[in-house]
Amino acid sequence: MTGGRTPGNGPSTPVRRIPRAAPGIRAEGDADLQSSGKEPAWRGRIAREGDLAPERGSRRESKAEGRETPPGEDPARLAEELLAWYRVERRDLPWRGDRDPWSIWVSEVMLQQTRVEAVRERHPAFLERFPDPGSLAAGTEAEVLKAWEGLGYYRRARLLREGARRVQEDFGGRIPRDPDALASIPGIGPYTKGAILAIAFDLPEPAIDGNVERVVSRLLAIRTDPRKAPARKRIREFCEDLLRHGAPGDLVQALMELGALRCKPGTPLCPGCPWNRPCLGRREGIAGDLPRRPPRPRPHEVRTALFLVPGEGGLLARRLPASAINAGQWTLPGPGMPKAESPPGSWIRKNFGIRLEDCPRLGTFRHAITNHRIEVEVRVVPRSTGARLPGHRFLDPGGKAVWTTASRKALKIFADRYDRESSR
Image (tube, rainbow, N blue to C red):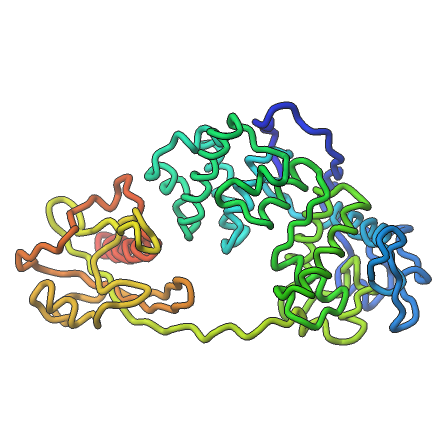
C-alpha cells in the first residue's frame, strides 16, 4: 500500500512495517541462477544448503503446533525467507502506502475478478471521491456506480455501499477490528475479513485467495482440490502457523505477491522463488499440475447485437431492472445478453419492422458475462418506424449516465467510426 492518507478509523494500531526497497533492486533473474549458480540477492545469509535441501521425502513439524511443514523447514524459517523476498520484489501499489482499513477494504473488493493494472488506476480516484465509509454510505447509487465505472462486476460496488452503510449505522463509521463484528458486515466474506484484519490491524488472520491456495498447494504438494474440506483445512493451518512468525500484514501480502509474480498458474517461475528448494511440488515434479481443481464447464457461445438508434439529441437506451446482472445501468437496445431472446435479425424486424441488412454494421467485439462468451455486432438503425420500445428513452451518451461495459464498447466503436469519417 502506498500514499499518506491518515486512517479514518480512530487511533492507529501500531504495526510492523517492511522498509521500502531501494529503486532498482530486484532478485537475480532466472539466467543468473542457472548460469552463475549465485544465490538470489534477497537470500543473503538466510539460506543455508543444510537447512533448505534435506533428504527427499523427509518431513519436519512445527514445534509449536505439531503441524506438517515442507521438508527441512519450520514456519519461522519460511516466514523469514518469504519476507526477505517480499522486501525486494514487491510491487508499488497505491493501497500499500498505509494501514487504513477502508483503503484495504476497497482495494480487496476491486481486485476480485479485476486486473491489478485496472485497479491501480481506479483505486486513488475512488478514494478521493469516497474517502471513508460515511461518504460512500451517503452517496447515491448512481454516484457510486459512476465512480466504479471501468471495473465491471458492479454488484461489488453495491455490496461495498451496503457494507459502508452498516459500518456507519452500527459502528459509528469505524471499521471494527473484532473478527465477528467485521464478518457481520454485508459483502465481507472470509477472504476480505482476513485481509483487513491482517493488513490493517496486523492480526494473525489468514486471507486465502486463489494465489495463496496455489502457493501452499505446491509447497506442500497437496494433490486434492484446495476448495474441498481436507485440503482447505491443511492450507488454513499452514497459513495460521506461518503468521505467528512475523508481521501478519506483511506475510499475507507476501503470500499473495508470491502467487502473482512467481508461483503463477500453469508453469511456475521456480528460479528466484524464496521457497524454491523446500517446495515439495517442485521436488516431486508436479508443481505445474497443482492445484488440482475440477475442470471448468465449457463456456456458452452467444451471438447478439447492440443497436444505435439516434433521435431527440441522443441514443435510445433503457435502464436495466433490479433483477438484471447489471441492474441500474443503461444499455443500448438489442436482443439482450448474456442470453439473447432471439437472433438479431428477428429482433430488429419485430421491434422496428426493418431487416438486419438495412442497419449498417459498424463492427464487432467480444464480451464475457459469467460463463458466456459473447460476440456482439454493433449496428446503426438508419430510420425509425415510430415504434417505441417499452422502458426506453433517448439518452445523451456523453452525459452522466452509467452504461454497461458492453454498451460502452459499442459506443467507442461508434465514436471511432465517427472520428475517422470526420477527419477525411
